[in-house]
Length: 179
Image (tube, rainbow, N blue to C red; front, top):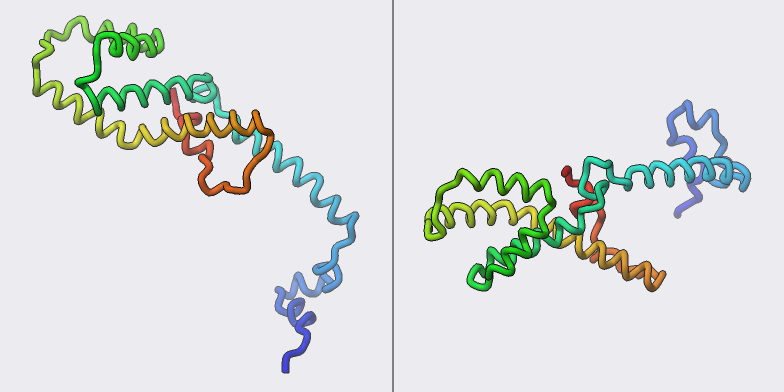
């Protein structure tokens, strides 16, 4: 036959805890004690959480360009997958999406390069290199776009669904990526 095991729980605690605490305090704290414990730790937790969720200025999220870079990465991936569909307009659009500092750097680096557009070996090398980079970078970009979409939807409807398993976490995006 089973019997109530309340006192056993207290005696299974380390001696320093069991001798200084009664089972009543462990099981039923008073409402005042609970309020004193929750209020400071809850506000400290919220402050710490909001501080951790604010990306540093040295990151794409801190600079406010994470979504822009995500869109740029997705466009690049589409161009790599279907190069036959890339015309001059699409290439110019991609170039215009780049930040001014990147465009300037790209222009200066390409000035001294003397290759022709028919260099198949160079094109193959670039395609392979970009493919390797996009293998890990593209999911972050897609998550960034998805996270922004979910955030916009929540702000419009002010309701969160209980289905958090399909939601993108901020850390899975480009927000905390260094510039």
